[in-house]
Length: 472
Image (cartoon, rainbow, N blue to C red; front, side, top):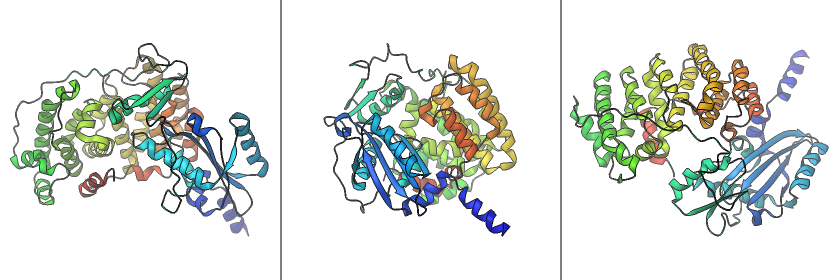
């Protein structure tokens, strides 16, 4: 009897996240709701409920910016009583008004807005990762309702009084040029010089070294094949096999020369906007090969790529930068992370490039669990330093601090909660990256069993397949 009781208790303790991910789509949909004026004002509060066999309710609500950003916020809960559910609905009715809609309408509002936002390079909020499972999967089984997204045929960004939405402006410019509009909720025009409500990113101030003006490689095959524009998307398998058959230190040395030479050829034109699209895949191929050969001699090469601007990464790597840089850095770290730590504390680098170093550190903790305490120590020191450095934006900024929190969540580092609270107390953490202090602590305390998949180390063949399929 004791065993049966223990089993039943274990079953009731399944986390809401896991239950919703694994079970929600098997439950019947109950009622769905939205504010009746969402199409007029571009902001929809969409609620979908499902019913468990025991009579309890599962709910997900989505704050949907249909003009531009897609799902800005998401909430989910399970095991709600009838009174619990009614209390939640009353709050929405009092705040925005609600009307009952069909599931097909709710589905098309949410998924349609997401697709619209993703075309502009904007992803749903973090909590949508779980909340989406209260929705059906977005397939042809759900009838399409052709809602109009955007405003007057354009993406239309509304910047709130706290200025948080400003972070999307550069993304929209990169994807859309000037084919979008934006306003603030307190002014008719956005003035980046006069609006200081949101701390800006750390200023990029890297002092470039003298890069080689000519190639000096031992294996000319490597230089020729990496620069061949016919090989832009991938190197032929025969070429990969020949390169990987060479001594790893020699390959790493040649890749270093190729990378430095390519940086020297392109970084100035990238920075001043005069670069043309007549480039090759040398930087991409070099990172994938460094991941494959796993030579400590390659770490300086990867770090020099990470010292470049975000525009440099976009030009040479596109949206794949965060997928190919961290594995290469991890592969070259070979038990020695001093250079990665030095990089993290050196001012003047691009914030998003800097975050690749955090991901590589988490890879060490996941794939070398005997080193977890070492990595926790690195994050403890980093967190402890942020309250002093954040106001000065010294090798950090609010965006970087937010990303630090997301990686600490993936580490499930309960021992770092005091340091986390101290950083949030500065008021200089961008909550849009990973949520507020309470949500970060909650995520750490309740575990993140889905994080490990994100940190799988791909082989070179799977990386090239990913590149070929990216964006399809």
